[in-house]
Length: 322
Ligand code: PBG
Image 1 (cartoon, rainbow, N blue to C red):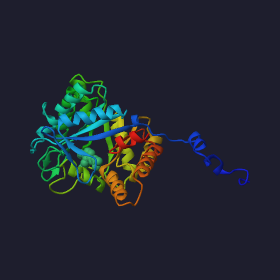
Image 2 (image 1 turned 30 degrees about the vertical axis):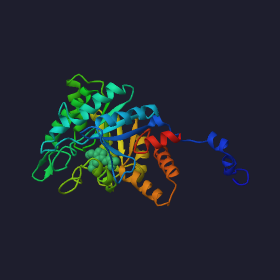
Image 3 (image 1 turned 90 degrees about the vertical axis):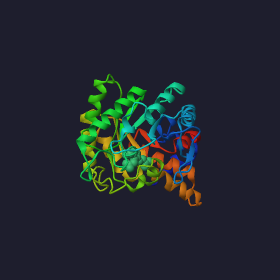
């Protein structure tokens, strides 16, 4: 005998009532803003498929970081566009690489801002793959050395967290071991634990100039059809020492965010990727949906599914609205 005793609409009647019973809250401190750093000075080049996002030279990057800090955003994650690319991704682990210099500049100018570095090779290899290519495929174990060296160089530059996104097996353990050996036992690892071979990374590859020059990433990134396998990936990364695990993309994979939240007791992050951002922005530009509401609804859904941290290109806009 539910109705008319129970009327679900009672608690929806006014905003104060809705606010009182709201289960999920957004706060700027939960957001991480992805930023793209490139060589030069005074460079602020808009990424055409990601309006409002730019390739920034270090001097400009520092300005955006100061703004992010003043908005109370949880932190930034950096992606680098090196001066030149080669077969061995030298720019990824060079002590004076673009990301390493950027981290030093941010730590000097905006010391209170949390800085995460993306640890991967695809922006640094001439072929655009995430590791060392041997016989037409990425060689897992050879790539681990590059990743470990990158992570250590980022930590040495002052990164607060390192975030491997390459999907090589064993990289969390390799990075943990290298960080500890170099005196960075306290640098956390945020692993892109369940990262899918997704079409939604399209705009990012323009932003980071990291599209593979042959083939695709399906021999290392996950098949979008596999949820149980995602739980195994996460479990292994936790065993190897990941402090925070991430699921990526976010909105098409809410089921896996929820599954991971229920199973694992580490902080869960989700990456609302470039394509998720661009779809909303494009639809809004066409007048097909309301940009702000679509942004907040998508972020709320990702939090409701169980992510405590969201990497999102909306970090600034959402922080301003909240
Ligand atoms: C690097 C990396 C990618 C993204 C984050 N780190 C691209 C890829 O794997 O091709 C995608 C982020 C986005 O789409 O916003 N490996």
